[in-house]
Amino acid sequence: MKKRESTVCPIVYALDIWGDPWSLVILRDVLIHNKRHYREFLASRERIATNILSARLLSLVEAGLLVKIEGDSNRAQTMYRPTQKALDLFPVVFAIMHWGLKYNPNTDMSIPIMQELKTNEEGLEQRLLQNFDDVTS
Amino acid sequence: MKKRESTVCPIVYALDIWGDPWSLVILRDVLIHNKRHYREFLASRERIATNILSARLLSLVEAGLLVKIEGDSNRAQTMYRPTQKALDLFPVVFAIMHWGLKYNPNTDMSIPIMQELKTNEEGLEQRLLQNFDDVTS
DNA sequence: ACCATTCACTTGCAATATGCAAGTACAATT
DNA sequence: AATTGTACTTGCATATTGCAAGTGAATGGT
Image 1: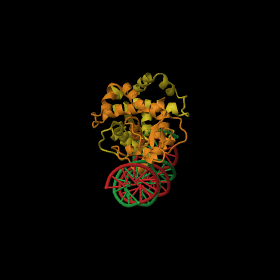
Image 2 (image 1 turned 30 degrees about the vertical axis):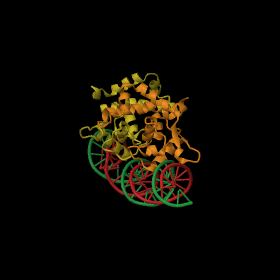
Image 3 (image 1 turned 90 degrees about the horizontal axis):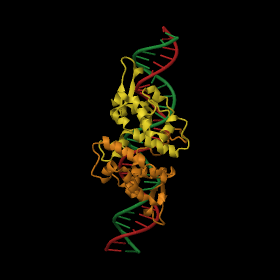
Image 4 (image 1 turned 180 degrees about the vertical axis):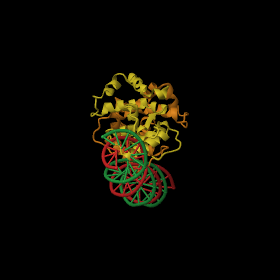
């Protein structure tokens, strides 16, 4: 699907922004695992290629989901942090997780988040949101 | 992202099945707009190409989200209907719609479903589910 | 019976996106 | 001064998508 400058459908709008196969993995890492550095995204299990990671980070910044915060005179300090627009994806991410949990027999249930999602989704969201007080305040 | 036969993450599991740019558009048409025929999917605003449509329908059938029902001696009767696994995507689709509604200024709010989503999501889901009594019964 | 139309696809090919390996530039560490 | 770590970019092979055209079977009209 080529990008449209405008669509009347909210689903297509969303897919144009993060409907490729990698953006949501990055957003998962930001929102759920509180990652913020290039090297952290690179380290996740899904083994995203460096060029793709760069390209996706850029497009997410352009779409207003992430903000790039550069340190003074040290690239290793560069951080990517979510905007409110990204934080509003929590319900989407949780809904997808519920579905994946139901149908993926290989889900790793030893991760505490998986248990908490089932028993106390609201509490989980509130707790995760505390990682982003700078954005929400 | 190449398909993995197994992942420990429910989100990646989901993305492997419908994380390409077109599958969710087809699922939207099935779940929300009650479409079932090839020609109906082809007619939607997003103008999916015929070869992509074939390929996606096949992969959704293989993933167990759709069932292909062929008429006797007439291809025009062929229908694609959702399984329970697809019906369980309603919460995901609704969450995405809420997000798109909030951030897409071009959303067509004259479509009754958009209003109903905001005021009575639960009722909307129940009503749409009635289109699939054959599956749920 | 004949012809045009509809339908559910397939095929060929150009354009785009992804995957992989290697390289670059800078800063901190040894 | 040399090595390591970090955030990228570049080049190129491979896969996926987009577009136009074609195919074969069934229906509809004259």
